[in-house]
Length: 145
Image (cartoon, rainbow, N blue to C red):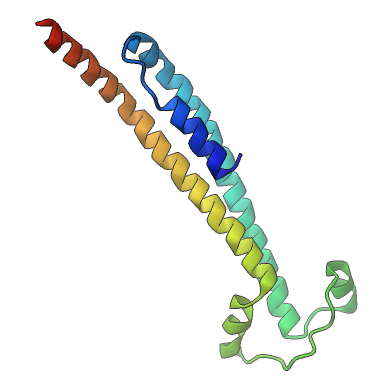
C-alpha cells in the first residue's frame, strides 16, 4: 500500500453516516483493528529499512577506507575505491553524498511518512466515538429532548 492508497482508503473510512450512528459506533473497533495492523506492518518495515541503512553505512565506511576484500567487493558488485582514503572528518561528507545510502534514506523517509499518517489516522479513530456521541446529542437537542 502506498501513501495515495492509504489516503484514499481513509477518505472512505472516515465518513460517519449520520443516519446510522449505531452502526458507525460499532464500526469503530473494526477501523481501529485495520489501521493498527497497517501501523504495525509499516513500523516493522521502517525498522528493517533503518537496519538496512546502518548495514550499508558500515559497508560504505569500509569501502571508502579501502578495507573491503576482493570477495566482498565482488559479492556487492562494487569496484575497488580508487580515490584517496578520506580522513575521519571527511567521511561524513562521503557517506552523505553516497547514492546507495541516499536511496535507502529516501525509502526510510517515505516509510516514516506512512507511519506518521497512520498514527494520525489512529488519533482520529480514537476521537471518532466523541464525534458520534456529539452527533447523537445534537440530534436529541434538535428533537427537543
